[in-house]
Length: 261
Image (cartoon, rainbow, N blue to C red):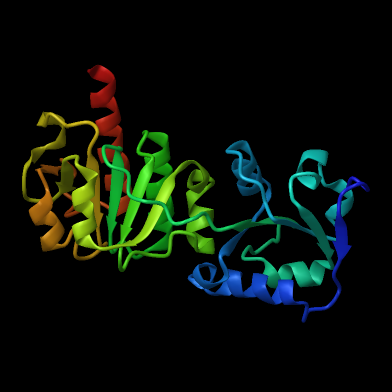
């Protein structure tokens, strides 16, 4: 590690920072109370740096610290080095990566009208939510609106599943249904039995795709707000698609339609 960096050694398991990091790793909503979140591993850390995020703290294991690249060592305001055993205690990975960043949680963003968006209606599974964020980022949907009851967007599991997509999106949590009126763009929902096939629809852009609970789908109140309902054809005969798979299909279809205009 660059010796000019601001480096602090921590050896006590009871250190307040390590207690906080364990809490962030173990409690999916702790970031809301603590005002910051933890990401681990080279991929997520670099994904944040590429998007211009500056970590408040970098944490390295003792075994990894001698090989920390210069750009990583100089990225954070403060660098911490801890024994490997203590790093394992704050890691959410089966094989701890030996490095991680602590970021301040971004300020609560106001819902932006006219922006291509994804609405998450009580999507529960962290893997699904993270995958949907990746698709949103890939296909140009920069605003993700999580209605109350959706999995915590900045939880460790969602962050890992998002693979860095968080850092290029505007994420808004805990939204009540009436707030969607401010979007001022059409809401589109998917259904297994309502609407024409997606490839036969003229998809508006910008729009907001609404994706619902894994078992119950989009709620009736949100369904009633939709300007358009589409079906995804399943010639193989399956009853329904995983919500993350459906999201990728829908968002890609919108991106293709927008590119053709």
